[in-house]
Image 1 (cartoon, helix red, strand yellow):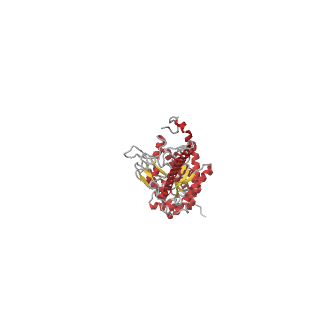
Image 2 (cartoon, one colour; image 1 turned 60 degrees about the vertical axis):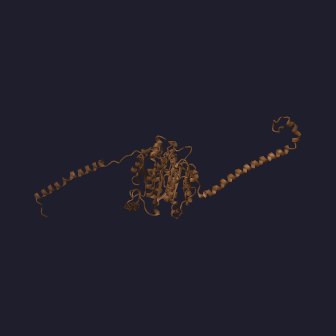
Image 3 (cartoon, rainbow, N blue to C red; image 1 turned 90 degrees about the horizontal axis):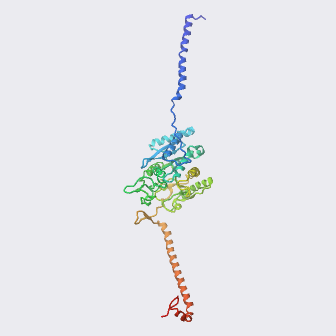
Length: 478
């Protein structure tokens, strides 16, 4: 093998050195880049968490907690603004959808299926929560609270439900996999703030009525379900409004409820303080067609709460437990107009605690209520195939209203009730007459008896009675 010339050997060594030396600064620059890149990362927004379990939050604190939940659990929680109130406050709804394409804790197959459903919903052009066709997609649980301003405990209980489904989702993963939740924790923010700062017993919203000095409408009498049967006096706490959906709060609720109605399975309205779980109807005394299934659902919640801490709830229809009819309520609207399979009212405890129980009771009432609500949600999922709203007959008509001399209509009974009550009234009148006649007969018999016994003695005592000059009970001399 021929030896390489010395000049060529030196040239090869120089080329090797030139090839090696430029690579060193590249490696150093790469190390510098890897070190400096973490400093350029964007920091996440940190939102302080209000204490929802032990205090009554104001409107701003409630919104702060909702934003905290959305920021922390953005993979399966969304926040919607339903409308703006008279005093420019937002009515907000929180959607909790575990079977979401953005949820990294789902399996790859579940995420693919969820992505297909999301694309189908997006192509429909409908804004808001996802709505899919078919009864098999009825899986939405809708919970609303804070309709009446003074019922603070209902707001705290709805926030407790959000807390259980998000911050403690690992304990409730079973229902999260089967159901979606839409929770409106504060339907009436204007009235709620007014009750916190001015009048603790305030019930209505804060929209004034033109031409009068009175303010506010009862939002739970303002829905378009036999609305005309409601109270018409503006000064009353239960005033129904000028027309159905005259209030911004009820219009906001109507828009959301109408949009999710095809997938709505179970609607729950929180109130206080009747300590009862009630089902329709509120506008009449007659029970609904599927009252047995609704009673089973209510009994499930009652049994769960009694098992949890021994507190006993009453169950029955709204009109029977309240002993009066309530027209224009949201529960009758959801069940009667939107044809939701199940709808209930849950009146939290209790008369001795009032509308605003002590702060020490907030956590206890919230936890026991969630225990019952969770069991009712499971029962609703099991009962969904037993209720076919399309096959039931038309709902009953409300009692006929006859307007009297005053502003509010006076209630008269329906045809079915009139047949039952009319004989009772006649029986009462007859019983009064018989008692009076019996009393008169007894007096007459007593008079006859005294007369018959006194007649033989009168001749013997007549001279003595005559000398008394007419004093006493006997006859006087002429």
